[in-house]
Length: 187
Image (cartoon, rainbow, N blue to C red; front, side):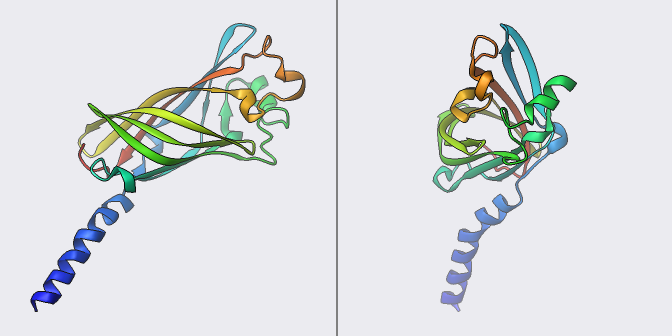
């Protein structure tokens, strides 16, 4: 009987964190992914209207934690002219590459709810290593992850061909995110 109890306790201890992580979910209505690029030196702000995330995050078990997200590139929203242009082959080529993806490979705690999430960002079939600074805050049952990072659009062949001229559209793009999650364990 003791052996059965010990085996059952071990099974719960092993699977309970996984069960808690399985309940983690993005709250899309409260989340956003935005970006700022410069065209002829003038900031141009945009956002993505559709994205998804898979999260299995436990601040007490970072080596086992994973974060992945997908952005539907065709959901880009800047203005009518830019939106029609950005889905074309020279830019996002959404017919061939409908999604950008990020998959974490390591998460490092920095203290005070701050983390570094290392992983691969893939856009338009081009993948690059990326380290994303993330600040987590918790209120009630919700955890908010915020951060800003920069990418070089030409690393991903976004704005290819004639648009590769960085005097017209700058190479640097700032990405900001606010991801509201439910089910994340206490920090």
